[in-house]
Image 1 (spheres, helix red, strand yellow):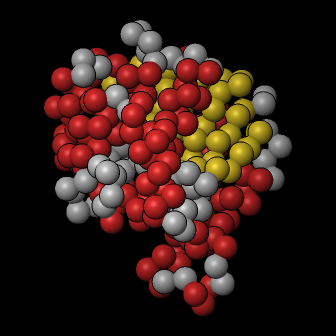
Image 2 (image 1 turned 90 degrees about the vertical axis):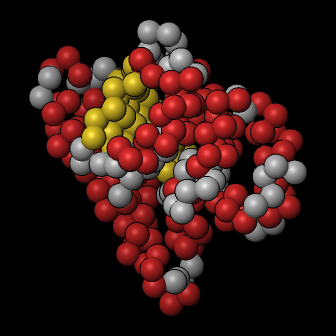
Length: 236
């Protein structure tokens, strides 16, 4: 069973590692493209491998990309590039991804696999903090309302700021997927039970979840895949 490692078990919210393993082995891994598998296994050796996109969440993202015929996408937080490669393999040949991350070193771990897959030409990697990069995009009027899809897996404190900018960049009917919105299940724990190291981001996440739930501009679905993802569809 290729998925039976502690790192993979810890990524999911399911309380039964055996059930999570069953889902991966039955539904996810058999359909995972070879470049994605290769990048996932390379990333497993990274000390921060827990930051990688969960493959079951990635499978849903690929389906969403296909359902809306996404061509122009944006990604905030790239790490080694699993979700970026998944997007590049999914969107059409003339599709483009704007990928923003402060850490190019992590991205370069996955870059040889992205190149070997023949999709690097679809990627515009911007080494930058996300807020100035997003503001730079908004300065060009042709970017407003032009993106089909966005994926955010970055610093939780700035999610609300990213959200407002992304809504200006996204076209009507476009989709944003936010990662880590259940924060290892701590959002449902009593505060005194939350490990100290997780408290600050847990509080940011809870506030952001409230913001999304009350945002009338969106349709929202929170899904317990990986560390929790929230899918938002822009209504207007």
